[in-house]
Image 1 (spheres, helix red, strand yellow):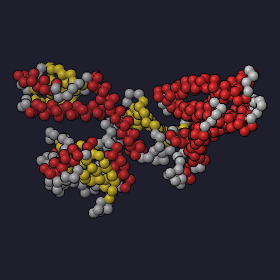
Image 2 (cartoon, rainbow, N blue to C red):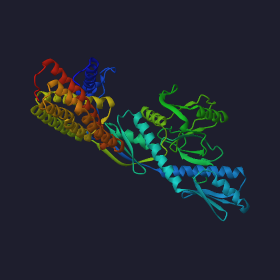
Image 3 (cartoon, helix red, strand yellow):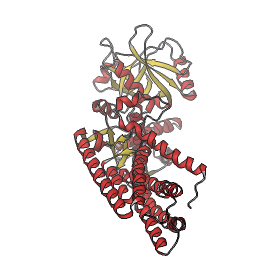
Image 4 (cartoon, helix red, strand yellow):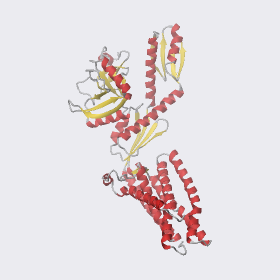
Length: 526
């Protein structure tokens, strides 16, 4: 245990050097750190919402909108099946969490009932007279709502990541709510706008044989929808309402890319988009069959553009034009790239956390860390003399390694994380205390300095590993099961345990062995 090969010395010193290199950017401000070349460590520790300030949003997923959309799809499917088999019906509509339809002939009731029940899985059918009703089961409703929340979390994460926000917290809260914490966000209104828009884009042909004025009066033809124009993105000379076909010609979920740009003709901001192969083929087929007809681009239930198809668009790409600002075009492209939310999101709670609290917390954490560090240093020197000084040097290196580890992993430092660092200061010398006490016992037993040190490290190392390993397991469980502040505490505690084991088992022993070889003392100053 008192022999160190050259390769071990190289590894120990190399890890210490890397720790100092990754911790160094934290000694400068953020603007200075940005000038550090990319091939050098230039990442600073990411501060959490409680330290850096930012936005806190609590969102509610309107899952009932997904249920309604599914029911509308069932209505369309029932209509198609009944017409295909020439079964006459009336009163096809949504009722509660189900769909109801009246069959005109009693002789066709059983056949219609079977067709309606097979439209989709997870439906319960019943008949009363000639009226057939199919309802979604409770399990189906739960699955739809749960899936809507899971998809919403993923889409919210993609949109936030596109904005470049570092270390956001996005997690489920309760049955249908999402907690979003965005440290350091300077424009919370833009984030709210991005999250508040469903960004569901579809392409529809217009109902050309119907009159918009009649539809406004309530006489909407079957298979058509009356939609408002998005006045923020359309020219003032365009209609205020459009009568579009209900059937979606091409769905926006086939989009694989969307980018902001500028029109070659007018130099106005536009958004270019591109479909996947299947979507591109469908888009090409629709435009090929409908040359000369208007094609409505619908975003979140509003028509943002309805250009006339001049020629077939076979390349699987196109563009959206309108009265966009540059920022509007960038945000629309961002939302289309990230994907559409399955359901609208409602902001239930919004808080803007200022950095003042964070500054006070950081200052208090620094004071607590310094006081704890000074007290531990004094205690170790008074108790173990020269060996205590070695432990103090290792403790300082341990603090640097923790800072370097946080920077390397880009782990978020929170207020509980600072508490974890303070706790690590006290725990970091535990291993050294075990070793030094064992060495004392060996010296009292009459061993020589080399033999006492060798026995001290050999017999204490198992206890050190066991004690730290059990604490590390507890910290990992906290990280896995916990959230928010608990995770912040678990992160710094885990990193601190790993670095303290390294400094106690390797670095302190290297310092002791180096001193022992140079001084060759007759007795140990411990």
